[in-house]
Length: 397
Image (cartoon, rainbow, N blue to C red; front, side, top):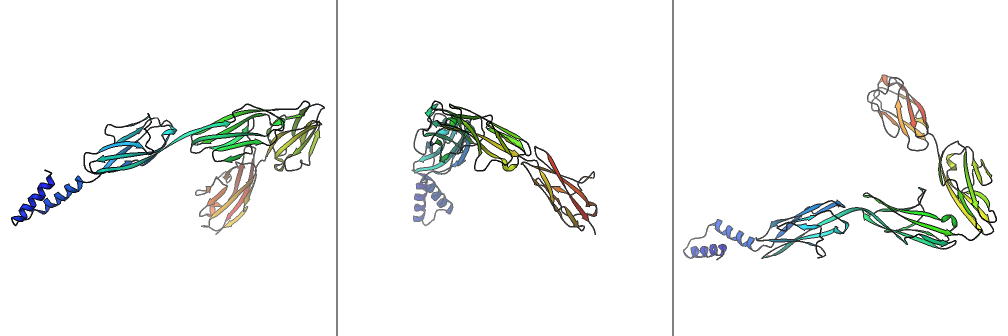
């Protein structure tokens, strides 16, 4: 006979005799009854976890309340069988994922069962992994001049990878069409100069993966084919630059030069397919196009030129008059190719105590003193050269 039933019957007999059961006995009766009829209540620790591909993780299912005995088991949320790299402990409370792989991502449910019912709790596992890339078609591709060509780059990875197309031998990102996990490069009408190896790169926090495809454009006999000596170049402002273009074809093609979306710099000379630019400036940066033409058609080749400039520094303001206790703030500005680094000094004495020089070129003194007067020098430096500017600070009572 259950213990709580005995207590209730004893209480009834005492009542017939004119005596009442003790309050402790009644409370104990109610407690035993409630526990005996309670389904399990469980929680999972941790509720979610993020691991890298190849790492391991465990989830523990904890019983908060419920009548014993309680049986526990782990299931996938979709009721599929647990993968071979996922094991449970002897009592079913611990789920361990060893050498996690992408297919392990998802929800896992702990199910606890007793005679009164069952309770569940869910854990979520996220697995980060480096990108995987697939090209459609895989290539190599052999196409004829004028054909329409499309290549899809599909990628998977967690976090979701960023996709970009480049041409082998160049760091310039190509103009493509991207939708969700697909990045498409296409040509409405391929030309001979489009022949080459193209690279789709997928990158996330876990790594970088790339896939390549070779495209060969077959020319008509005698059609021109242009090529340049270099596809990318970086030069310093003020220098003289020479761009060479060669072309094959029959009859020999005529070679001309142009600049994308802008006229050629006014200081230029074209002789026999060689473009010479003198005293180049930042405005001369851009893409230069060599065009070779004969009666069979035309061909283009491209050179990307970037003009870098040394820094030119100024101080704002360049003269400051203050009283003791005032705050000093001087900004050093510099034009030129970034990154630019700033350094402040004050002659041989160095910066006064309490002076702060920030990375963006500011000089700060919260409360100036008479001894802070002087000429402060800012030096702006990039990988080309340096430039300096001065600010005169006068502190008078």
